[in-house]
Image (cartoon, rainbow, N blue to C red):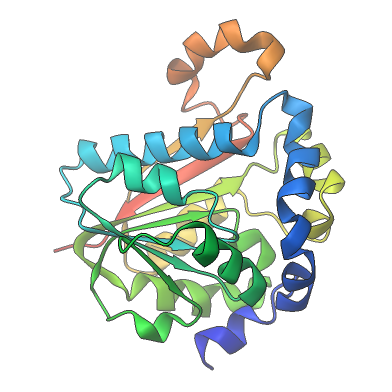
Length: 241
């Protein structure tokens, strides 16, 4: 099965995302607005944490793939935190991808609908946020194997997912039309899937504990990264050399 065919069976289909691409940002703002923050706040924080983890394992980053890039919300933050990297964005929702391409025309950005356009073992870092909960569980192994094949030896995978143990996260997802039918992954499932894909899991971190009105408590969030109660978590893994 081709990767495009496999992802086309996700619980929130290409048709749904394509139809909603023009007001994707509005729906996202409607959902995450409960926290008092904007989508950019979360994207910037995720990518800053991803850059820190890549630096922790001394990874030279010359290419980044944003798998499931949507309308390109993460693009400018990836470009800023990985200043020497070519940024690839991939999404099966053609209208969302077109919006990303229209908004980011610099030569550093490469927008691809089909992962076949990226050479095997050529990507230094894959960044993926909130994609796998839209992929039907029986297709996740196939999709993950194809994405992992793109990572070079020594390269990394930062897989961010919504935390099903966080009540606020579940509430937000119910408010976003394209998230209502998603099948969320626990950190244990994500850990197991990356391990089974022959990657070495380096760490699991939890993020986004406090809404904006409790922002003064965010000072303590670095100490809470092992506590599985944040709104999102990241599993960071590397491909063995």
